[in-house]
Amino acid sequence: MKKKCLTITVPCYNSEGYLKRCVDSLLEGGEDVEIILVDDGSQDGTGRIADEYAAAFPDIVRVVHKENGGHGSGVNVGMELACGEYFKVVDSDDWLDREALHRLVAALRFWSRSQNRPDLVVCNYVYDHLEEGCMRSVHYRNVFPEGQLCGWEQIGHFGPSQYLVMHALVYRTGLLRDCGLRLPEHTFYVDNLFANQPLPFVERIYYMDMDLYHYYLGREDQSVNEAVLIRRIDQQIRVTQLVSRCTDLRKLRERQPRLANYLCRNISIMMAISSVHLLLAGTAQARQQRDALWASLKKQDRELYYRLKYGTVSGLTDLPGAVGRGLTVSGYRLAKKIWQFQ
Figure 1 (cartoon, one colour):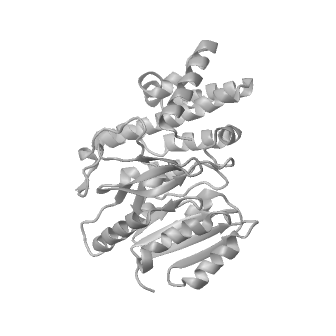
Figure 2 (cartoon, rainbow, N blue to C red; figure 1 turned 120 degrees about the horizontal axis):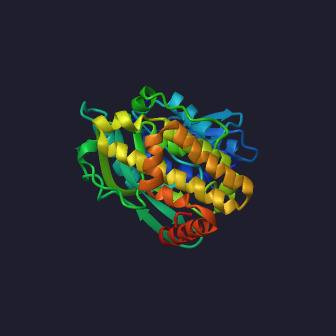
Figure 3 (cartoon, rainbow, N blue to C red; figure 1 turned 30 degrees about the vertical axis):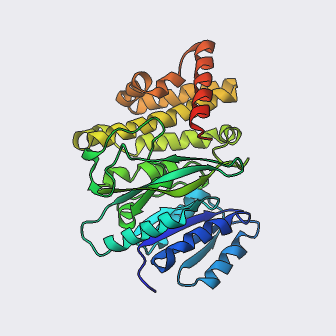
C-alpha cells in the first residue's frame, strides 16, 4: 500500500442519512489519504455503506466494525490503526471542502519529505446551518502567521469566538501517540480533550488560511443542542474536569506562557458552559452540581480556581442569588445570538 500522508478517522454511529456526503468529500484527497470508518455498533445501514466504500476504494478506505463505545472509542481506534503521518478526525455528519483538502494534502506530501515539519496544522472551519442556508467561518489570521512555521511564543491573541477546536486541527500522528492521548468511552464532548491535551507537546505550528472543515449544525439530536447538552450535563462536567487536570498550568507557564494562558482561557469557557447549562436545567439538584463543580476545582487547584472565578468570563456564570443567575442566563442568550454557536 502506498505510504499515506494523512489518516482521516470517521467515527460512525447510525449515520446512514449523511455518511455518503462525508466520505465523498474525503475521497477528494486521493491515494495520499487513508480513510478509517469506525462503525461504532450502528443499528442502521451505516456498516453496509462503509463496507461498500471499502470494496470500491480498497487502497483508501478501511472499515472497523465494533461494539458501541462512543465517539472517543472511535477516535481511539483510528489513532491505534493510523498509518498516515498526520491525523484528523471528521465527524460523520460533517464534511471537508474539496479544494481546501487538495491544498492540505499537497502541503502534507511536501512535509513528509522534510525534517522540519509541523507538529500541528491549523485550518479554518465553518459553522454550517445547512437547512437555514447560512454559514459562519472561524479563522485564525490574528493568531498565527499564515503560511510559515511558528512556535507558541509567536502567536497573537485569540478573539472571543476563537478556540482550537477539533475541527481546526491536524496533528502529527506520532505526537498523539507520544503524548499518551486516550479518550474516555461512552462519553460525549471528548473532542475537548483531543483539542487540548496534546498542545503542550506541540513545538511547531503551521496555519493555512482556508475553510477546510464544515461543521454541520441543525440536527435535533446533536450533542451541542441545548436540550441535549442539559440531559448530558454529567458528561460535560466530567470532560471539563478532565481537561482542567490534563496539564499542569503552573509548570507550563514557565516555558510556554502564551499557551498556558490559552489553555486557562479554554478551561474557563468549559466551566462557563457547564455552569450555564446547569442553570438552564433549573433544578435544585443542578444548582448543587454547579456549586460542587466549582468546589472541586478549588480543591484541585486553588490558583486556577481564583483565576477563573475572578479573572475570566467563567466567573460571571457563578454569580450569587436569583439576580445573578438571571444575569448569567441573559448573557448566555445574547452571546448565542451574536456568535450562533449552536
